[in-house]
Structures are given as C-alpha cells and as structure tokens.
Length: 575
Image 1: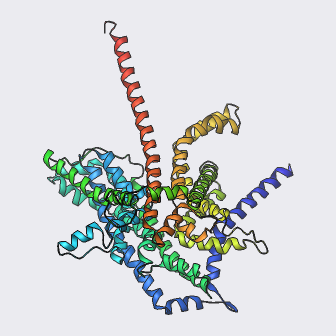
Image 2 (image 1 turned 30 degrees about the vertical axis):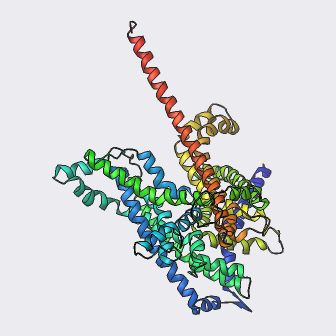
Image 3 (image 1 turned 180 degrees about the horizontal axis):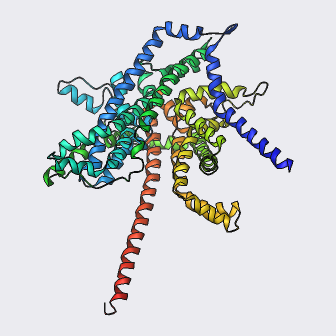
C-alpha cells in the first residue's frame, strides 16, 4: 500500500520539476542575467542601457510603430468585421479567406512581397515619379508600421466579428422599433457594445507588433531603424563584452511592456464573459440595395486584392527573374532560381530540419497538451493548471525574449549539468514546444468542453477501464478538433523565424532563417523563389482542408436529399 502512494508523489514531484525547468527557470535565468554585474548583482546594466541614446530611440520606435500599426489594424479589422457580420454581402467565404490571408502567410514573406513591389527603381515607383509623386519607400518607420498593420489586421477582425455576432438581435430590433435606422442602430447600439472587443483586438495587434521580429528586421536593419526586438538580436549576436547582460536587460524591458499589455487585454476579455454563452447569429442585420451591394463587394475584392494578392503575385513573378528588379521580359525569365533552391544542399537541409522539427513539436504538443487539458478539466489538477499558466507565460513573452532565455537556461539548466544542446535541433525543439504548447492546451480544452463528462462516467460504470475509454470513446471524439490545433502549431513551427534566428547554428538552419539570410545577403530573387514555394505549400495545405470540408458538406447534403426522397417514397407508394 505504501508503494503506489510513493510512486504517485514521486511522479508529481517529477512533473513539477519539469514545469519549473521548461517554463519558470528560463525566465528566472533571464532576469538574473540582466541583474548580473562584475562582482555581484545590481541595476548597472539598466543604467548603462538607458544612458545610451540608441536604447531610448529603440523604445520610442517600438512604441510608435506598435501603436500606429495597431491603430491601422483596428480600423481595418473593425470595418471588415462589421461588414462580414451584419450585412448581406455575398461570397463571404472567399472574402474571409482574403481577410485572413495575412494571418496564414508568414509575416516575413508578406514583408518580402511588399518590399519587392515597391523597389526604388521598380515599376510602381518609376510610374509614380513620372506622375510627379515621390516614390514609396518601405524601409522607413512608416513602411514598417504599414506592413505590420496589414499583418495584424486579422487579429482584430477575429476578435470583433465573433463579438458582433453574439450581440443579441433583440437589441437591434428594439432600436429599430424606436425609429433608429440601420446605421444609427449600429453606431449607437452595436458599436458601443463592441467597444471592449475592439479595444481587446487592438491591444492584441499592439502586442503582436511588439513581438514581431521579421518585419522590422527585413525593413529596419538595413536602414538603421532599431526597435527593441532587433536591438536584442544585434546585442545577442554581437558577442562583445557585456553583450548578453545588455540583451537580457533589453529583454526584461520588452517583456514588461508585453506582459503589461497582456494583463490589460485579459481584463478586457473578461469583461466580455457575459456574452460567452450566447450563440452566434450569422443572419444579416443590414440589407443593401442590389446596386450598392455589388459596389461594396467589388470595392472589398479590389482593396483586399491590392493588399494581399498583388504583392504576392509580384513576388512570384520576381522569383522567375534572372535579374531582380528588371522588367519581366522573355530574356529575363528563367527557372534558375528554383533550380538553385532545389539543388542547394543548404536549402534542402533547412527544409528537412523545419519539417522534422514542426512534426515532432506538433506530436509532442498534441499528446502533452491534450493530457494537460484533460487533467485540468476532469481531475481539477493543480499541476495541470500550473502547466497551462506556464505555457501561457511562454507564449505571452516576445519570441526574441524567449529565445534568449532558452540560451541562458539550457547552457546549464541545473548546477553542474551542461547538456551541450545549444546550436542543436534539441534546443530548437524545446523552444518550439515551450512556445506553442498553449495553443494545443486551449484547443484540446475547447474540444473536451464539447464532451459531456457523464458519457465518460457511463463508460467507466459499465465496467470498462481507462484504456477502453480513451481508445473507443475519447480519441474518436477528440481527434479532429485536437489535430486542428496541432496543424496550427505545425504551420507556425514550420515557418518560424524569430526563435531560429537566435537558436539555430550552421547545421540546424530552418526554412525561415534561409529566407532571412538570402534577403540580408541581397539575394532577393532566391528569397522570392523560396518564399513562393513555402507560400504554395501553405496554401496547398489549406486548400486540401477546404476541399475535404466541401466534400463532407456535399456528402451530408446528398444524404439529406436522399433521405428526404426515400421518406417521400415511403409516404406515397405511387411516387
């Protein structure tokens, strides 16, 4: 009787130790590194940092770019959310795909496509100069915040549209019965009710802009526009005296900004909890006249096409050019860029590394995240709750900060133990799992909430054991929704850049880092070719998912029609 209790306590102790090693210890090590000075501890690193004008400039740039880009994202996301939630527009599936495209495509590929579209000697800038206008230069603060605004617009859209659909229709009907027009109802009722969701979405866009490393790295490093994320990167790779303590200090500053915003966003989300139990309504509340509706639809397709498709198509065209930036003539057209990509050992190794890391990280998150969600909901486990909080903290930290924390921690995770995994795939795998675990926990939690616990009690009461419960009941019900979260983790890890820019070595390069290196080296045509392949791979995966859903809907429709016809035959033998 003593042994099972001892094993249970030992297992719990081991689990808490793993939680500390993977989630708490890296953050503590980062803080301690920022406070370490010759001969002891203190705030000297922060004093040196804030006496440097470049640090203050990086803070100003970070706040300015993040705030302005969040404002642009909020404006676009709110307007699109309103049109998609409340109006009788047609082709909403296609429109929503275009709206979410910046969320699907990695931000560094979107940045590469926009920078290629507005080359200083490119077609558009030459045309603008012929008309007497100044050319568009994206390698500025304005260019960075514009691209970030487009990239983070889907974050606001998703926050707003779900909230708008949960606002009771009765409120709108009551306002209309009082003599309000459709637009007055939206302005006085719906917009006022949706303000918390709009603010939460805008704050999420602000946090995503601060966290983003790719856009300011692609557009800001070459033009000497520094933000906190790129400054941390430069300090960490500089390897000079005091480089790591300085990078740690900057990381603490960026983390405080990010965590403060996260707490504020959590408060805004909790204020919306009263509507969580309300079913979303997808019925239109505003009806356009046919001519107006056609004009709005055409305008949306035009705007979204210019924001999403035109830069990507221009990037794909540039991927086939021998000389980047010259006109796409027959003499300049070639397959050489793709031939180099497919024949390059370095690129193929990077693709293989990314695929392997994404697959293993997704599998680990699927198993561990689902078990943590189950223990939290069904067992009310404190350990599972702490695991969720730790995973949420790792996701809330900016990616560049988490990468630096992993470097400090896993150099010597326990006194006297040096695993020697820096620069290997093992450290990248640990970072990916730590970073994306919360996505699986949240997804699996939502899947488990859809299963009545009484079903599990009935299975166990019938004499079946836990293995039978999982194999025959839970796994068939959980597989599809849980794997959907795993697919998101796979795509995120496959195209990840921030963590790999700090943690990868020459032998563990990833596909995102390969594109970044091409861009920084001036090989824009090779970067465009590799980005085109990754874009095709991502869109192809989403396309297969869409076709599968369409096929299943078609089967359900056929079964419904067939069943209705058979019922009619049974009721009317002469039919």
